[in-house]
Every structure is written in structure tokens, then in C-alpha cells.
Length: 395
Ligand SMILES: *Cc1c(COP(=O)(O)O)cnc(C)c1O
Image (cartoon, rainbow, N blue to C red; front, side, top):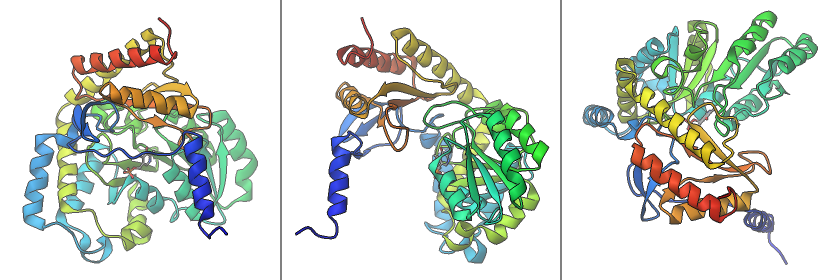
């Protein structure tokens, strides 16, 4: 006789069989260029700490000061007694940094999508969504109850065809795209998407989680990269990647942000972000506002690493950003590659279905400004060694 959780046992066995079971590695140090993973010191090619801000002295100092002043927890949701002076100050600073009218700080980028989408569209409405949009966008769309129509990846012509055919059947429409696609490192054609949206009066939203701190002048993000200031209604962002901290941001037109303060459910029903995190976020924005040095170094490292990987014969996909997918195909090969790299002192995780489509398993390298030329060369040497050993590259 089986029991009621046999379905779980079967599914877990299938995951292990197909090389898709996620083995958690545990981190025993700060996410610097080298870190302790499962008790071993390895080169960090894996975290989203693009600029090294997670350990930046100014962020750490700001967090310490806020901790002493505000204590450890805000102890209320933002709309009741959880809005700290520094939450409001951070929102103002981010709005300034991104050249938008207003911004709302929420618990995470994932939360930001849950917070922003459902108040704006409902059952009578339609959302046009890029095929490869992030899971948190997809969930935010589902939560809204709106009809979701998927258009082909980064394809404004397909978007337009689908808008033309479907929009008349709904009350209003919205288009949502990732800015930088997190698994491939390609960039949405935001200017073309805006033209379509403008022609049909769609609400426009872009999730810039991997673009902030990376694209645009001094890391101001994808809207800045395309010179579309004031044209995108909502920019979703996160403080958990290039900014090195945690928290989500919804930035854009004041009329929208004011409305979300009344209607966004994670804002109304879940505790505010801690003062320590908030203060660290503010210091991150200050660091980026003052100098483009870290962003410049990130791009220098990116050009070097990707150029060398291509020269070695690796397929690094269609990335145009520091995200460097090393395409391997089948999931078991990607897992084996990652394991061998780890034995050689390099931390770079394998990524498979459902995070990426079946048959497109890969190792995703995250280039960072904090890596020295020696660090990058160490990583390249190990990639070459394991690549030859597993027959991925020749020579
Ligand atoms: C990482 C990511 C998120 C989630 O951000 P968190 O702050 O980690 O919750 C949301 N959207 C996109 C596109 C992302 O890449």
C-alpha cells in the first residue's frame, strides 16, 4: 500500500533521474570574489553581486548605523506603522537616480511584480507577455486574473499582430517584458516595444532586475540605455542583484505609484523591509550616483571573459550583458560540468528545466566587477580544462 505522498516520492525520483534535482550548496562567507561554499574556498562566478556592493564598506557602515537607530524589525506593514523615514528617503533617492516621478519600495523583486500587476489589470483586461518572462512576472499576471497572451521572445512584430487581433475584445491592455533576460543575458528591444504600445495605448511595464546597476549611464537601467525616460509607465526593479542588498522597487509615473500605495497587496499585508536593508540600499544608490567606476569595470571584465570563452570554443549564447550562459544542452552534462568545476575550485551552477527550456541546460556565469584579471584567468583556465575533459571543446 502506498501512502498519500507517493506522488512526491515519484516526482523526486524522476528529478534525480533526469539531472534536474536541485542540490543546495551552502555558503559560509560573504559573496566576495572568492568564497566558502560547502566548506571549500572557491572562485565566485555565480552570485548576482555584479558590482561587489554586497560587501562594500559604505553599505555595511550604513546598515550598522540604521541597526543601532531603528532596531532589527519594523514590526508593522508599511500602511499601518511600518513606514520608516528611511523608506521614504530611499524611494525619493531611487526616483531621482532613475529619473522617474515616484517609486515604491517593497520586500523583493518577486513581490514587486505581485504588487504592481493585479491592481492595474483584472478579468476584463489582457496582458501581452514575452515568452521568456521571469516566473515572478508570470505569477503576477496570473494573480491579476487578466487574460495572458504570450508573444514570441523579443519580437515586436509578433507583439503587434497579437495586440491587433486581441485588444478589441478587452477593456484595456498591458505589455510586460523582462529588460535583461536572466538566463540568456539578451536585452528586450524596448524602443520597438514602446512604439507598438504607444500605437495601441497599452500600459507599459518592464522588469529591470538584471539591468539596474548594469545597463545605462552608471547603471541607471534599461530605460536609460534606450533613452526612453518618462515613456515606460512602470519599471520593476530589485535591490538583490547589482545593488547587493535585498528589496524590490516599483518606479514610474506618480499617478500609478500613488495608486499602488492604496492597492498593492504585499505593501498592505506583509511587513516592511528592515531598516538595515533599507539603509544599505540607500548607500548603494549613493555609490552609483557618484561614480561610474564599478559599472565600467563590470563591462571591462565582461568583454574580457566572454571574448576568451568564445576563443576557447564555448557557445555563450546570445548574451549582450555580463550574464554568460555556457550552453551545454542536456541537464546531466551541465550538472557534471558544474561538479567538476567545483572540484577545480570554481563555483558556477548548472541551470536546467524549468528555469530554462528542456534541452537547453547550461552553466550560467555571472561576471562581476569585483573579479581581478587573475581571478578571471583562473576561471577561464578551469573552464578550458573541464571543457576538454568532457568533450565540450576540442584541443
Ligand atoms: C531576480 C528577478 C526577480 C526577483 O527579484 P528578487 O528581489 O530576488 O525577488 C524578479 N524579476 C526578474 C526579471 C529577476 O531576474
